[in-house]
Each structure stands twice: as C-alpha cells, then as structure tokens.
Image (tube, rainbow, N blue to C red; front, top):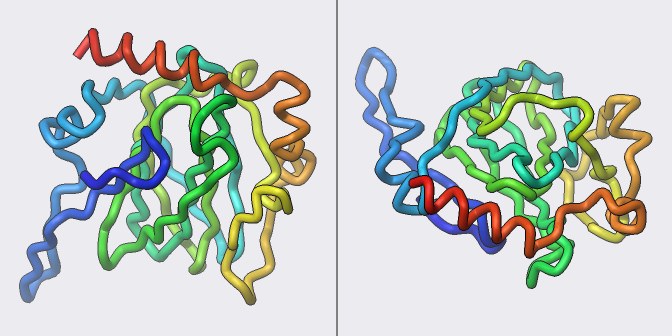
Length: 199
C-alpha cells in the first residue's frame, strides 16, 4: 500500500494476473494493510453503489469517534475517488487528493476515520464497493458540498455533476467548521492510537 499526500490515506495497487480466461488479483491483503495502517481493518459493513456517468457522491464523513474508515474499490467502469482532509488542526486541512479507480488497474483506496470521501462516476453503471469499519449511523453522518469553490476539487471537465438533494444542500467546508461539524485532528490522532493499541 502506498501512502498518499494526506496522512491516513493509502492506495493499494495490486499485481494483476491475466490469462485467456480473464484475470485475477488480490484487492485486499490483511498483512499489508496492517503494516501500512498500524492496525487491522474492522469490517462492520460492506456497501455497493451503482452510478450513472456524472453522479457525484459526497463529501461524506462521520463523527469521531468512531467515525467510519473506508476501503474503496471500483469493480465496474471508472470513478474519480477523492479524499479530503477535513480534520481541524491537521497540517493538510482543506487539501484533497484524487485517485482514479477502475476495472482495468483495480486500484483501491483506504481512508482513515475523520477524512472526507467523495467520488464521481466517469462511466455509466460505475459500480463501487467499499468495506466500512463501522455501520451507517444517520445521526452521526455529515456532508460537505463537493462543489465548494474554496476546496477547489478538480472534477473532470465535460461531465455535468449529478448530486442528490442532500449533497446539494450540504454546507461548504468553512460553514461546516463554523457549525462545529468537523472532527479535530487531535481527536483523530487519539483514536488512531487506540486502534494501533488494539492491533
């Protein structure tokens, strides 16, 4: 697993074994994951979303603790997956990094608790699966508009973003901070330390 520019986020770039029948790859390996993250992945929920081209989901996050870490993979089509550092006090607060996930390279991303997550479908029927460390809890879930001009996420040109009503109405990063919705970097670091102690 390769560390991304935002601490707490990694990309997994598996070796693919093709033959005349298709291909095989390992999209999750516990030892490599544990070595990178410093703890195992607690699997509490597995999700699958299918999106038409242009669908833009996020930026989503949950209260820390326990928040919800995600291990994300696109199994059909392609998406632009974006991790946003929304941890108040983080050295990279307000920064984002994008990774293309598709059914050719079979990359996956892991984002730790407290980070924001969004993706845009680049193809029709883009199918994304993700493993979650905690189950969905509506009262602890929040969002930031992925079109926040201050964040300046560079979504692909020539694709009209299709947002849910909830995501359209989400606050900007600055508004979410003012409302006290964002996790603190200090709280996230303390929680990561607890996870490392558990192993």
